[in-house]
Amino acid sequence: MYTLYLGNKNYSSWSLRGWLAVKLSGAPFNETMVSLSGESQPNPANRSFAPTARVPCMHDGATIVWDSLSIAEYLAERHAGM
Image 1 (cartoon, rainbow, N blue to C red):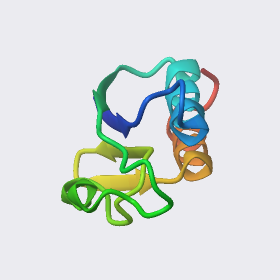
Image 2 (cartoon, helix red, strand yellow):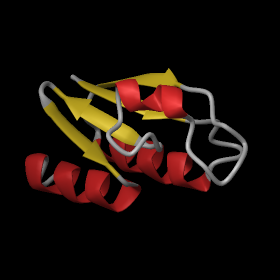
Image 3 (cartoon, one colour):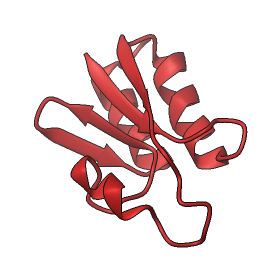
């Protein structure tokens, strides 16, 4: 099962894009909301789960995928035909 870390989908379009990619893939996932810093700099506390400290970030076991486009590509490769 995937774990998706994201900010508020109402205020973070990047988070919304990542969430939509996982949701539309049909794959089971856990959604974890995190605090955004509200500034142009990422929240340093987010480095505990994301190498860039930015969201969205998806975990698949030991594999970490960040950036909404990368998440969509990863899911398309893993769930072809869904």
